[in-house]
Length: 542
Ligand SMILES: [Zn+2]
Ligand SMILES: [Zn+2]
Image (cartoon, rainbow, N blue to C red):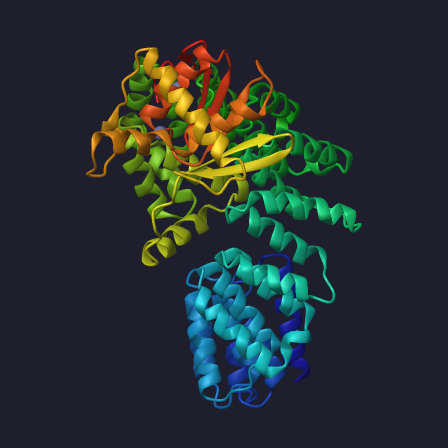
């Protein structure tokens, strides 16, 4: 027994120095079996299982093999395997093990629930999480604060935000992790205004946001183009020295880029000095690309090569998108050729351990001609904000199997610090009557200017007049009309659209900028459009 103790201690210290290997674990296992302790000495056996399923040297399939040799596995033995599976490459397996465990009336404890819930979060298994939640209540584990936070985190990650909010409200004791779970959940679940409101409430209640919190809040500001809020958060980051964290700096760059200030983004980029990561460079190239500043994006791309920073598929794609947005056709072709010459490009995807990502990149390259940068920008947001490439593939897989409906188009506009959201044909706004009569006026004015509606942007089989009306009440037009009536003359109007701006809206907003003498900035899914005096900064490359 003393010998086994010292052996386990040795393994533990090897784990700490990362020199533990699977053969050490197998040696330990052999000693257990030959000494006859394997079936009876439960605490040592669980330790062996943990070493095998959780330590970096471990091997999950070997852990399950050891498990199956146990005649009467204890709850701890089960937990060791469930925990390993939950953080392994196939988290759904942890859920199946949990099911087997509860089916054969093995004693499930709070830890089992906690590990399985973590698996649910990674596999985006919403209904399974709900089932486990009801069992948590039945077993009486719901007083466990850690378990409550794990549940909240699962609901936030799978996008069941109502349940997440309910749990949060009901919690008697909250910690920073519970706040963070809800702030990032709201930010990633397309409820960015609420994410920012919650972030502010944290300060009011005396909590100190940390790196995770600011990442969520910055992502919300990026989505809303909420510069003022973003700047405040940036100030807080500097004050608290959270900018020591490279991921936080990357998110600040992304925020400034998406709020329309590539120069501010560039200042943060420069101040990072030698701490720039690959993501930092890529985010900055994307920011220049979104602003149609193809030359600067390309310059940075070249600089990456000179500085010796390894350029990955995203760097190439970002530079290509930038060329596309700036109408730099020849540069784009040159880049494409140099890319085709490097097989290392797709190889770089493999270093992320994701074959699917490599496929995605190669498919995107083919589609680049069809201006599909929108999806890319969207996906790269996930990359920039979380730096979790491995999970991207899983999320996409889960979305495919769940048949996610096409995202409806909507537009945001901020007036006097209040964010207004419009969907196509929206009549829910308090001022909708005024907005619609403004649109009628616009319709009349732009026609007088010689504009003819491009009704081929309407897909429905309806009459000409109805088609014109369908176009007329697009969310971006509603937002611009509201901007015209609610802001003082001559001030710029900024609108954010979650999808690409349509051709008709693009044509009409150009004319509006001329006849109403307003600068109108529309950030769509792929880039910024700055409309001024009848022209757009994209020079119709979009
Ligand atoms: Zn439109
Ligand atoms: Zn444009």
